[in-house]
Image 1: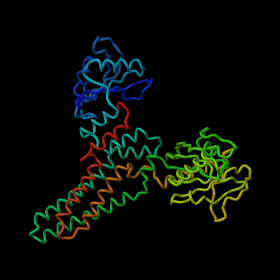
Image 2 (image 1 turned 90 degrees about the vertical axis):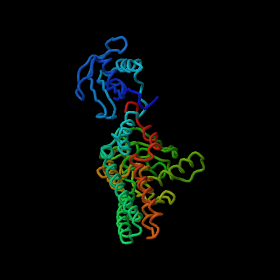
Image 3 (image 1 turned 120 degrees about the vertical axis):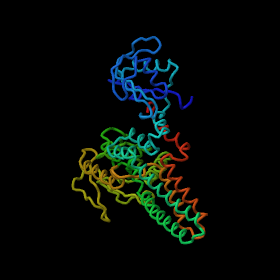
Image 4 (image 1 turned 60 degrees about the vertical axis):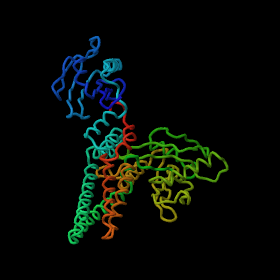
Length: 447
């Protein structure tokens, strides 16, 4: 199948709905509209049509039809939309008729968006932002994805790429006029000034604490503590459902259990883990090992204690690392006047997973810490490991260029070319093919 194939797919959510949207993109889109709807409506104007089977002429449904001639369409190709009633039989009949025509085929996952990219309607960062927007679960994730899909990252990276190219042009001019020492020296100096300014900007962009990635994936919170302090009860209370088994038997939790929360529009992933204690059981030891590994990789550790016998000291294996620790004193319903500070002045958030007391304060504190670490999606931030890798490559080449001695400019001009290529890979200007499959496989069919 070639890229010139005409493709079709259900583009609205699967299942029964009031209205379903079926899209057709490619050179035969207009012909298919004429066969099934009698005529093409005026471009970008919704028209009510009877939709018939293209072979037998039997009426399938009636609905709104839209026609977008290329290249002024979302995919850059001729594009049609059929807005039909959202019953399964109607959708199946329309798609069956389109395929039976021999003029189109079902689209592969992400193929509409991929054609938009290949026809210059989107860059790769916008494509990734669109995928994130579809998957966004919280308001902060939505804001970040909208900014990226709208081209905020592309404008930043393209501006940097143009600066690198400007510096490269100056270096090439210096090489061309190497017999005129003053001209060459001035050109190289100006190129280094551009590269120095750009290297500082990229370095600052990279040193963002991974806030964009944290916001995209969720602020990782691990609940840890000794056995039977109410960790699983606390998880259930935060999730407002029975996500974890609660038992008075020590060692009940053996594996990590996750729930995703939306606190003040921020995505927070809370994990319940096995209680930490000395044990001879192989399975429980494995659970404790996973607790320590997950806790050390978390963005925040919730160290939960029993108000009747609080253990304020976090085990050394779990305390290692730079992420913050928030002490939580559980079961305050048993001792309402329990001390809220540890022997070394550590403050604790006091809660009762049983009655719900203090949970609002804990949720507010979690949202505050997540906001401080991940932001709210309003600023331009790195969201993908792919971006970080390309920017680090560009920075490495700029640093190499800046270390150039005056007589080695010819040898180091390649550093600027490589830096520009690294930035070009971010938006898909160069070497896009190697990342396309990874990006577009995230999309559903019809998008």
